[in-house]
Image (cartoon, rainbow, N blue to C red; front, side):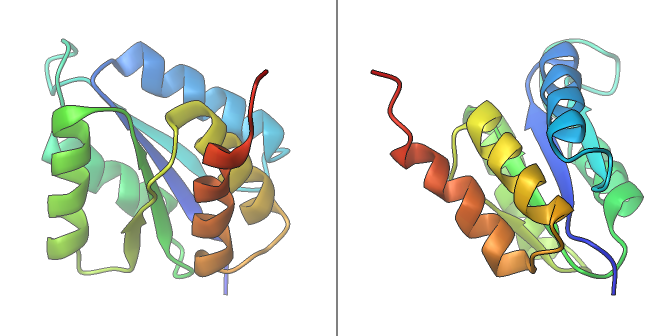
Length: 128
């Protein structure tokens, strides 16, 4: 079985792409990370279809973790998880820190539950 994939869901395409880029680097390019940011026209917003496409790109059978920023990105991610025909989980995690933690764990070959736990543990990392 392959590695857990990651999808970064944001209202901004550039924000999602930046977080995905960072996660890929932290994961030493051993984990598939895809951005699903903005609406289908490239503007600010969110898109179920972009999330679906991103999940299909990174899914190799081990499951996919979604990391979302705010509002409708969370709602669309929840909806996707409910309707998905694959194993996908929305991590309750801060976007950047969660993506980095998840990428590190996924790159090490951890299973879906461990990757989700790593993302969610990012709330515990204090900055001061």
